[in-house]
Amino acid sequence: MSNSNPAYQLLASQLQDGGFDIENIKTKLKQQHIETPSWGYGNSGTRFRVFPWPGAARTTKEKLADAAMVHQLTGVAPSVALHIPWDKVEDWDDLKKYAAAIGIKIGAINPNVFQDEVYKFGSICHADPAVRKRAIVHILECVEIMKITGSRDLSLWFADGTNYAGQDSIRGRKHRMQEALAEIYHALPPNTRMLIEYKFFEPAFYHTDLADWGIAYAAALKLGPQAQVLVDTGHHAPGTNIEHIVAILLDEGRLGGFHFNNRKYADDDLIVGSVNPYELFLIFNELVAAAVSKEKVPSNCAKNVAYMIDQSHNIEPKIEAMVQSVINCQVALAKALLVNRAKLAERQAAGDVLGAHRELNAAYETDVRPLLAQVREEMGLPSDPIAALQARRYEEKIAQERGSASAEGGGFPGA
Image (tube, rainbow, N blue to C red; front, side, top):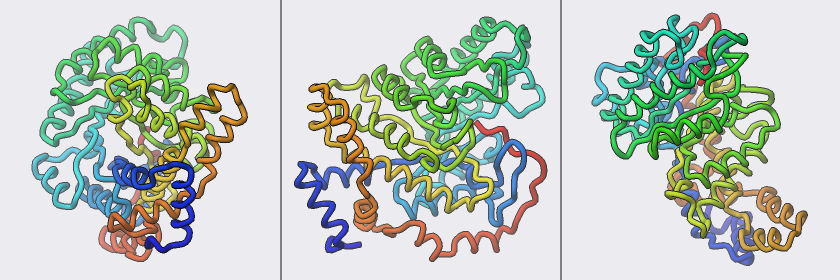
C-alpha cells in the first residue's frame, strides 16, 4: 500500500484534523514488540487431546525457524520464549547464534515444575523439603540459561495448590513459597526480572497458592524491585476486569508482562483478541495511557512491560494462528493510540459519563487496517501478513519437510 491509497489517506487526514501526530503513531507501531512462545509451534494443545499438525516443529531450532517466519511477516515479533526442559539443548551458545542468524533472539525462560510425578502435591510449596529443593535447583538452572542466552525475564508459573480443604496448611505453603522465591530471586543477574504469574484455579481446584494478582503482587513486594507480576489474560474468571488489574499494577510499578491469549469460560488458550477484542483494546488503552501520563508511572513501568503470547494451537494452523495473534495485538495498540487523551480527560473532569465513554469508543470503532498496512509497507513488510504467508506456502513446505508426528493422549498442562 502506498501513500496514495485512498483509505490510508482519508484516515491520516482525519487523524491530523483531530490533532494527532500521525508520524508519531506510526513510529510507536513500528516499535511494538510481541514475543511468541516456542510451545505454540510444536504439537501442544488441550489437557485432553493433542491433534498432530502437519509440519509442527519437532526441535527447538525448528520452533525458532517458525518464529523467525512470523517475525519476517509482521516485523514486530523478534523474540521467542523458551520452556525448559521442553526446549533444552546441549549447546546454548550455538542456539543463541542460530537465533541471531535467522533474525530473532531468545526471550523469556520458563521453568517447568508441574509435569514430573514428584510434583503431584506441588513444587516450591510442597511439604517435602527434597521436592522443594528439586524445583529450586531446576529454576536456578534456568537462571543460568538466562545468563548464556541473554534473556531478561524468568517467567514463573506454578501449578501448586490443593484439591481438598484440610489437605495442607495454606499459610504453611505460603511461607515455603516465599522462602523458595527468595532463594531464586537472589540468584538473578542484574538487569533481569522475575515475573510471577498467577492463576485462580486449575489444576488445583480447592485453592491455588498463587491464585490472583494480589497474592503475586504481595510476593513481589517482599522480594524486591526485580520481582514483578505477570498477567495471563486467560487466567481469570469470566467477567473479571483485567484492565483494572493492569491499571493498578502499572501505577504500583509492578506490571512486568503479559501472557496474551483469550478465553470464553476459563483458561482456553484461544487466540488473543478472538473472543473479546474490546477487552484487549481496553488493556492496551491503560498501557498507552500510563506510557504518556504526565504523572510519571513508577520506574517507567509501562515502557518495560514484556508482551508475550502464551497459546497452544490445537485445531488451527500453528503459523497462521501465531501471525493472527500478533496482528490482533497490533490492532489493539493502534486503536489505543487513537484515543484523544485531551478530550477524554475533559469529559472525565466534567463528569460527562457518556461523553467520555463515546470518546473511548470512537478510537475502538476506527478501522485501523489501512494504517497498519501503511506501517508495514514503510517497514518493508507485506501489507497483509496472512496473505503473504499463504502466498509463500510456508506451511505446506514444512509439512513436506517434517511430516506429521503422532500424538496420543492429553496435551501439556499449559502455563
